[in-house]
Length: 304
Image 1: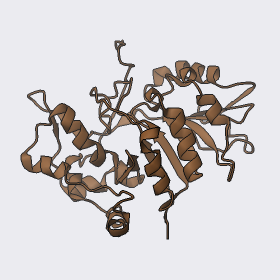
Image 2: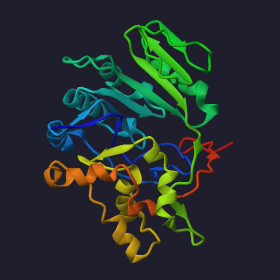
Image 3: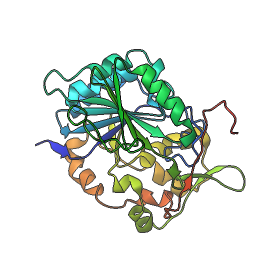
């Protein structure tokens, strides 16, 4: 019997980002490198489709449009899982990504699921620039709506995602923008010696305040399923940056066991149970939810 995910599952396809967001919870502001080609993991996801049902997929990073195979990820994930697919981007390259528009126009030949683009607005000052990028990307007459304009979605034909700003074009391509400029403390922090380190939080307290847990942000990375982004990415970040942590904590970040098609039969029950509560690795995230408003810029640019 297949396991059904009632909420979205995030396909994380690159560590690379062109923004400087303080406290990025996937550490992409720290020159974190690495990405994944669709062709390297397609066989794994075909095996996954025999084990789980996904209703909604988010393709993200980092900045997913910096992954040269992002269109393959959109078409591949949509076709294999026959699920609603959203590409979550910062929209700086939405009008410069070959094949992206054509992939958004397509629908699943079996169930006709929608593909759409979500934009995280990290700096309010970027709105006009990003809106212009979107309007250049879309084709034909465009309907604009959303809370910024005080205009509800024309439903039908465009579904209402409650976005800050949305645009819908003549071919049914939908783009939604949400404000995402208030970040909580990330797991990775710089210590007084200028080295990267991690929190040492009470596990229960950290979990109770965790946005990954609250929004059920499960991650597929390299064909493996993880409880959240940090637990998946910390070993890789440590390999690149050499975290200033104890040997015991290094062993802990490397001890997490993701779910795979190979271990599914004997491990899936334990894994899915772990999604509903804290794990020892939760100690590496902050127990506090006092965030700050960020004003990031594109890398290579200077803050004014």
